[in-house]
Image (cartoon, rainbow, N blue to C red; front, top):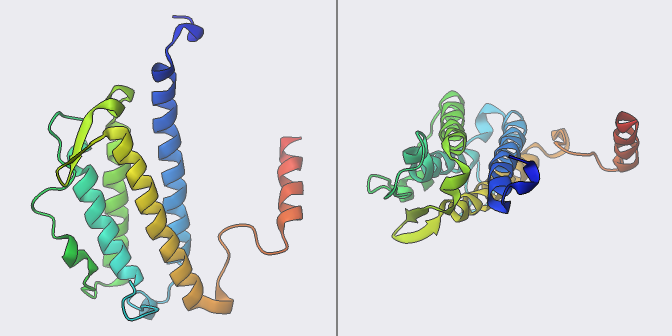
Length: 191
């Protein structure tokens, strides 16, 4: 088949899945860059009375990733539910005082479920129905919903850790005043 004979959906589906996976792997790395800067006694610290600690955010991400994507790890099946009855979402927001090692395990386990499900999806699956809390979405809509959701929580982690570390924070992006140098280095790499 000539590539120009392919339909937009045949082209866009694989591109979308590859792009979402790449961006979410980058988001995972961003979160890990923040989490590695936590001291052992920081994992359960909140910034306000109703705030979430890093531990709680990880518990919630872990629970959400399993609930939304656990059934899709071996590919899409009709009737898939993205909110199993066994999930206790409210419990995810109670700090259970897990150790940093256990929190890291949950972090990696949740992301493995989510990224594994993305890997199992096919472009044809993107238009298929997926139910979350009784509301029907396409798999594409559910994926976009999670991109927003997970990004929000990872950026909460970054802000939390940056605030806790103060002047000892090591930036995860271009340092202040470093844009010109960064741009010059990028230009030099492109040759």
